[in-house]
Structures are given as C-alpha cells and as structure tokens.
Length: 163
Image 1 (cartoon, rainbow, N blue to C red):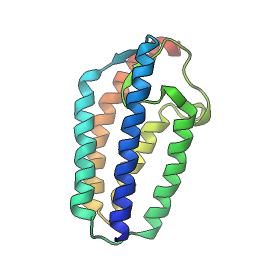
Image 2 (tube, rainbow, N blue to C red; image 1 turned 180 degrees about the vertical axis):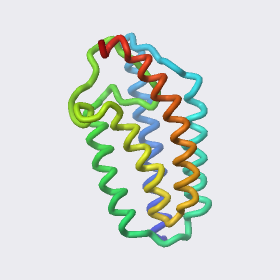
Image 3 (tube, helix red, strand yellow; image 1 turned 135 degrees about the horizontal axis):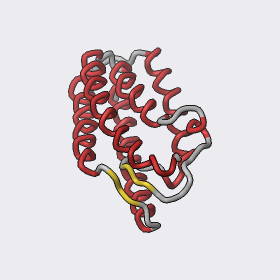
C-alpha cells in the first residue's frame, strides 16, 4: 500500500468519523431544545466537501507524499482535536444554536471561528500533501464562497447570545 493510499484512507476515515460525531451531537442538541439555522446551505456544503474528497482520491491515489505539507497537516490535526475538545457535545457540522452561553474556552477565546480557520487550512493543505496544487486552489476558492455564506448564517444565529 502506498503512502498516498494510506493518507487518503486516514482522511476519509476522519471525515466519516466526524459525520458520525456531528449526527450524534446534533440529535442530542435538538433533544435539548436547540434550533438549526440556515439548513438550506448544508447540502451545498456536503456536496463541496464530498467533491473535494473525490478529487483527492481521483487525482492523488498514486502520488508521492510531500513531507513538509504532511507535517503541517499533522499539526492541523492537533488543532482539530483542540477544537473538538473545546466544543465537546456542542460540536456539529450544522449551525445548531442552544440557548446557553457560547463556548469561550480553548481556541474560541482567541478567535471567533477557529473551526472555519482549520477548514480553510485543511482544504488547502490536504491536497498539497499529495502535490495537488490545482485541487488546493480550486477548492479553496469554492470553500471561501461557502464559508462567506455559512459564517453570515452563523453570526446571525448567534447574535442574541453574543449581546
């Protein structure tokens, strides 16, 4: 098995694990009375991220790994763990708002949207691990448009809790 295939398997397993965790957390939050906002953008986001993974596999399955980018990708995984641990049961892939104070620990005390900063970095860095700069460029542009939409939805949904 090549390094690229192993890397892609880890990326796919990670994404599937995140979807499982997000579904579990979403269900639990909704049971507690949380409300979803901006559900209309969610299928677009899922399609974008799915297309990104397909592009990684399609173009990258036989590529050599670029060590420097791989090291940066591993650092990003540490940031991912910090974000997930900071949000705990409130982490989800949807905009789910619970009528409780916002999380202000971990990276959330430093920047307003650390998970989105991580996603921006990952959308670029992950293809670069495989030397796929066109995939990194195209999906970074598409992701920027998606995040512009999503962050507006989330900021509006959280406005009352921030006051």
